[in-house]
Length: 610
Ligand code: F6R
Image (cartoon, rainbow, N blue to C red; front, side, top):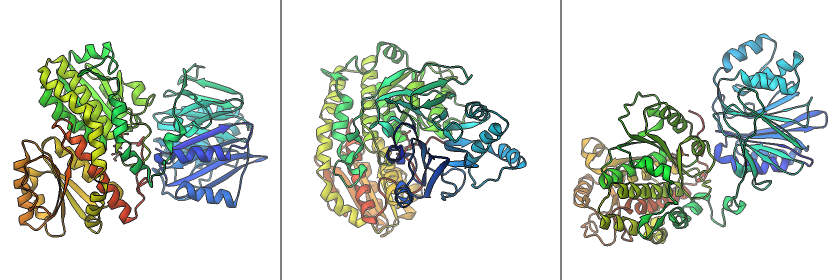
């Protein structure tokens, strides 16, 4: 994780860097810093805490210059203190910002200490800056010294380096962590993603693993892992800077929850036509692969993993294709058996999650039929490395807690299920019904959003609690898991999601009058069973909160403490619909508890380290 911005221009670059870092705070917000070539020295300002702390520092002690690098940190090596904040410098001659982990930093650090370098931080990054200085002291120029030092790094990294002896040049490199180069008129940029630079340019090179780039105000040279000059495609990015604002909402998370009807409609648009999947969904080559699929392995992390769990229920029930779902960080260290004709499918909002990418890279060496991905970020590492990528059209998701990304992932997975149902010649009436449910989905999600006031009242009952249990059954069990994940990550209330039938095998022991139990109760064939599980909770005095389908014949009205009725949805899209009020519930609990909703403690949006 961590965010990087670097600029070489003919104007003061401080504001450009700070504005870029603002959009990159999703990548980490433990500390922030900036290094600017200012006359005869490198001016460094850095602060523990969020970018707002750095802004205060810059207001008190301003800097100005035409060349600089900036960083927002998610701590790996060394606590989130000001000393460990980036940039790190060596003798005020070179400064470096770094995202990722330098795995061989210990032996390098020992060598450098033996050579007389004094370390000021506990970071792995400081090794790199002294190493470059060490090579420069031996007579190498900035470029040669940087290439030499970068070549020695093991691990995953993106770095940007600035140097007093070659003050217009910035050198940057990536291996395993994302980095883009933005081209302007008389100015050039490097950043962790295009959002950071979208106010400056829409022309980007996406660097590949092993690439090193050198920019000045009027030049840009890219070298591949072998050190050879290389051309990388120049892409024009269409992303409006309005998409990155809160647009009047109190938090990005709330805005993103409310964007879901549009995001789903955009994700379905042109991909579903007359009840059938259109050729705009996937191309002929991908369709040819799907025709051969006998098994599916889905790999993802966190909320995206929950999307995969839902998809398994759909794929097996509707297409009868055996489907396994696994957490990427576990899968990558297993020796999975890959049966003939198995499709590998990764799901990721960011497309930069290290564990998911590692799983994909492993899959490409295994016996898979092909690799597919569902991803929200075009041109991300996942999009570029997978054989076939289906993009969700959620738009930028900035709140750390994933909301519209999940909803659109599920929408794409529903479309994929429908595509496979066509290939497997599932009964046409069944398929038509599924397609109709998808068409009405944006409208039904809109109805769920109207429950906001009722949900706020429910949140008031939960805000003082230390724990919560979320229950679901069948395809709604992953929705219970997701409800618990959302509550814990933004409100810091300990929460667990359970399949309701499993309660009596242990967790029921936790239930007493202090335990809120939140049940997802759709109108499906498991409703009666779920009602019995709810009785088990009631008998132990647990406080029951239920979300029900307003058309269902449930007997819950007098048996739960708080009940909210949702607009009826079909059984296929119901998990997508039931997830929405749970997002709002977590949101309101977090707001009432006064936590940092968009940037919860210890987390980051894009997890590019193991
Ligand atoms: C939870 C959340 C995380 C992500 C996970 C995977 O709200 O956002 O659990 O889902 O870090 O990230 P992506 O989808 O970018 O691979």
